Image (cartoon, rainbow, N blue to C red; front, side, top):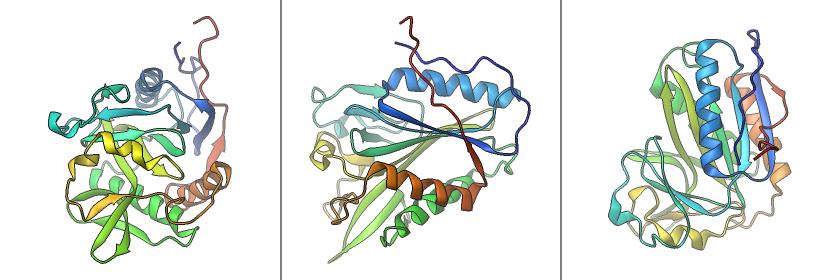
Length: 237
């Protein structure tokens, strides 16, 4: 099964394309599509794209992943990936947003870009009255649980090629948090720091409602979007 990048050249468009996939998207096909789309964005033949999806349970290893942090190597498929960061988990109930944006158009400031991704996630959480924020020395967006405990609710892991980003963010809406037990998430083993979700915080949020909040927060940071069809598996595969 493969995903095909749109082969039709596009003229420059002021908006970002916004696509949402139903069902689970296989990870290798998603990465192949992102790489092809990012190349076309860099060439000026495709619009920027934010692609929302879910994966079946899997672990990914970023460029800084340490072998000892993969605690259960046989639990779920494990994929090495070129994004920054360490081990992370993707699975049902977690909204993944793959972000293919052209930083040449956006200032070529990597730090500012990461901060914008953080603001996007913080603004999304705020729509559900969840106070979240970044932490010095810890990537992602965190929630204070009291008694010196903090839990991560959203992860960030991106890669740049020719100043176009791919990979992106993952926000825990209602995943099975026990699945994170097969790794040391992001290499952080300190027992004061764990993982949470909207559901874990007592919030019953549908993925559709979450996507609405995610979209609103995105437009406030990055600008308007236009809805397009999601990438689809090759029918011949």
